[in-house]
Image 1 (tube, each protein chain N blue to C red):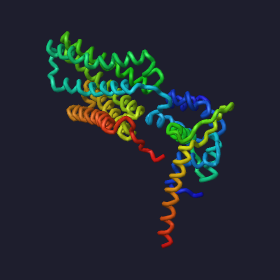
Image 2 (cartoon, helix red, strand yellow; image 1 turned 30 degrees about the horizontal axis):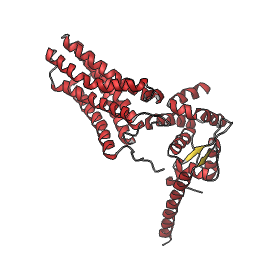
Image 3 (cartoon, each protein chain N blue to C red; image 1 turned 90 degrees about the vertical axis):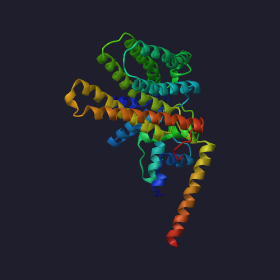
Image 4 (cartoon, chains in turn blue, red; image 1 turned 180 degrees about the vertical axis):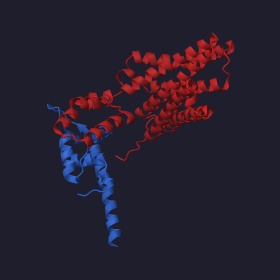
Length: 100
Length: 258
């Protein structure tokens, strides 16, 4: 999946990663790197996690470990779906224009 | 490496560290950290400070509003000093005595809130320093008023005024930061305000240095004019942020896409 710069927003990448199931920080970094070839720095990752958590898009789950897993909330899932639909619509139109 | 990480983590606001430090450290222990990662961690800390971290902070809206009023006073009062000649007459002292309760009233309220642990007690380092700054400003003004009353030399008055001006620059930076932290100002507006505050502070310090070492500046008048200009710009940005906030209501729309 080769995302454009539009899809390189760390928040969007985290939502995409968590859409595949709950993960802790390191697992998210690995998943995002596997998906996009892009490695998020630790500061960037936690900055974006903080913003997403503040907006209620993700939530931390209780854990005995120091590593806390996160998951999407229903609000986060809806926001991610909306973003993906917008991107899909955009890429569909763009590809049609290229073919036309 | 351990001490370097400690320093880098200290760049993050305390409230952020309380919430994320354990898991952040656990993540860092798992990573092979490169130079890029270290820079990224440092930038993340600065971002958390500039952007403001509002995790579970309960600051009464009135406290923020009163702090904002103090910021406006910090602009209005020096303006009055500029438009009134600095003659150390009794009339000028009386003027300060009349004006000081207007500044002190919100500050007293701030102290009251602080002691009730509703205000600065649970906020970040920047917010706490901002509140202390709010308290220190009237002390400076009081000192200035006292000196005016006892008619000291112009040099002493100028020194107090310039140090007060320098302090106000620092306060401006913190006030803008505070404004962003509690969503009173847009992030871009806050950043411009902080930049203006920084420039203004540098210029004020240059002005003071220029007074001590005249050869430091070829044309002292230009430097002083520039100083005043940036002082006005920084306050206009702060006031602009306040007005926009009042017009738009409490919930400032986010400027970020997600």
